[in-house]
Image 1 (tube, rainbow, N blue to C red):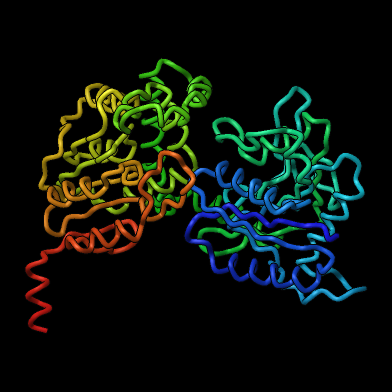
Image 2 (image 1 turned 60 degrees about the vertical axis):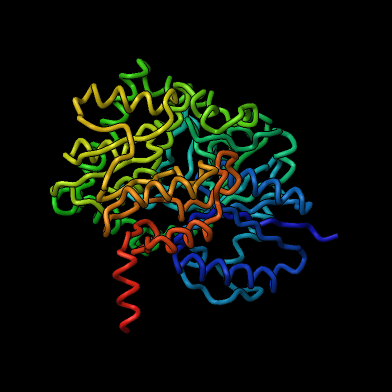
Length: 468
């Protein structure tokens, strides 16, 4: 009977063309050249990576797979654009999987075998780690890389082959929220605790796609390090990152002061947040009102992740805070974005569920920072933030009716709802994107892009269309 391999990819939206092209060619290739195996594909959307990875493992188990090849959604396997592999010649890029399989089958106690790739920013470090003599992990140096198979403490989750037997041994949850450890570090650590081994074949190198659509590879890596260093020397090249980073830093400092805890203690507290009791309440309002400081701690962690930092930067770039503006942050929680706009001089109203841990922090923070703001939906607003909110509200129609009525003509709804693909989150009770989109259009709210929706004058537009 053929061995079965599941190719699992946790995926955001906006995957680069380089990755899509490469992965499609890869799947075609393995279908033609790996005929001794059966392949299955599991692509899971993610806003929290651990959920997507757990879902992929479940899919692989249901399909009876022997191995799971984890790939991330921002890599290029064939970055050299190698010719198609022919026997008895230099192996092509897509033969890396055959090499990983050989290692898995020949190395004693091998549970995870990965390929090498490099970080996309800063010093473009190799994404493999060793365990320090006094504990903890450190990124391996170039001089420690042997260009062959070597045992490591952690190999990058962007390209790792896992023996499915590992998941039976460690039990659920296989992957946990990334409060302290990333998912790749978690699974490698759990394998080691079972007495199993983690390897990386550092002769196998894959590319990592930068946001500017350039692939980090051994050929480009040192130039990119140099460019990154030069950019950091100039104010103009910083793209105001200093300002956006200071917003998150101040937010974190205020949370730490409010809770009276240090970062490690807050991360530990965030682990107490649970959705398991959601069905025990008569309403979602009662459920969220029951969430205390652990809710704030979880948001502290979540808004500090690289993805959320990028989102803050993106949303803040939409609004010119140098001009007077009146906005509302609806479903604000601890409001790192909306509150930053208030700090920059915007008039803001903050709305959420009284008693919930994150909202009580925002009330405290307004007094602490001497911000004059409102706590009710009023308007008319220049913009309304609906960040991580629509999906949590069963009566989303009622919510949007209120918000649209409170919005000025040519005012904007700014939301990350249509980029949220986390359908497996129990708290996400309203994920019908098409229905929400149509509802807004029917009421004269149209998209400029996926995140910004503008309210138009329906009467004016109707007259305009009638005269066309």
